[in-house]
Length: 199
Image (cartoon, rainbow, N blue to C red; front, side, top):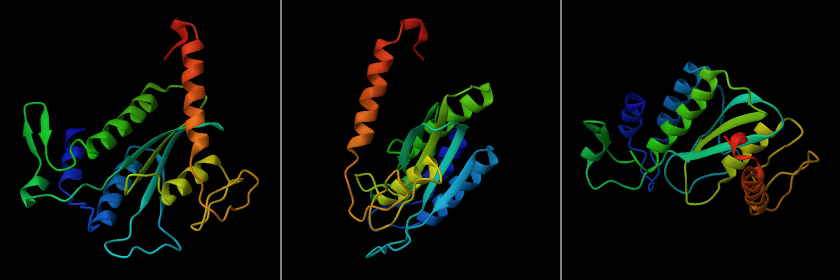
């Protein structure tokens, strides 16, 4: 875990201005495939950034089924005050460097949580999905594309809008109220379950 985190921290994915996104995504994609996870890469078709480098979104999945629990992380970091902040430093069991907490460390933690399920042979009633993208403080269109792809071929995505379940495209962006409602439902079910059945 520390080795992968060190590699990620060493890539200066500063935003703004938005640089080294492709290099970071390439490293993550390579590692995801090496770990035996299905991985797809999306680019911002139909979208152009005013400045900086074009971002990439990665979708990795484990398991089978209609429902998907998403882990969502961003690989960009706030600008550094010094180039030395991209030189990871290990002190005992700590790793210091730009993005080691927010949120490249989170990316590594989520990835290894999914790998733990895989190595244990856990039988899931659905899929665990890992979405990695450039973050801007809100759910981006590329992550919407990843979620639509993970939902299956009956669901489509377009850069100009959202998705719908009928296979069409909504031309107007929409807020993700459904996802929040889904999380509330999951929490309610978990609280209602007998304690021995909680995971």
